[in-house]
Structure formats: C-alpha cells, structure tokens
Image (tube, rainbow, N blue to C red):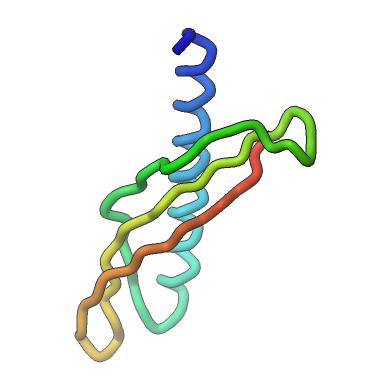
Length: 83
C-alpha cells in the first residue's frame, strides 16, 4: 500500500468517526444517551458513480443508556460517500 493510500484511509476513518459521533449526538437529544465504543472501517473503495468520491462501509459500536435506566448496545452501519 502506498503512502497516499494510507493517508486517504486515515482521512476516511476520521470522517466515519465524525459521522458516527453525529448519530450519537442525535440520539442523546432524545430519550436516550449513547456513547461510541468503537468504529470499524469494513470496506473502502472508489465510488464508481461519481468521480473523486470514495465509498466507505463502517460499523459503529456503542452503548445506549435509556431514560428508564436500562442499558443496551447499538451497532450502526453508516455508509457515507465522501469526496
């Protein structure tokens, strides 16, 4: 893997984390609060339908604390298309 590929993947990972954190903030505004425990980048490839974009599949794993005091897990697969 060349240096440019490593930099591109690192940038995509940061963007995926930001997207996942945005989801958590949206959940926190409702009846539950959540935290991100981890984000896994599952797949990265050029987005064939639009030049200059990258297709990323990621999975966010987190913990949800509900208003009634119960706790559960959340797994969200965001699939952003990033320039």
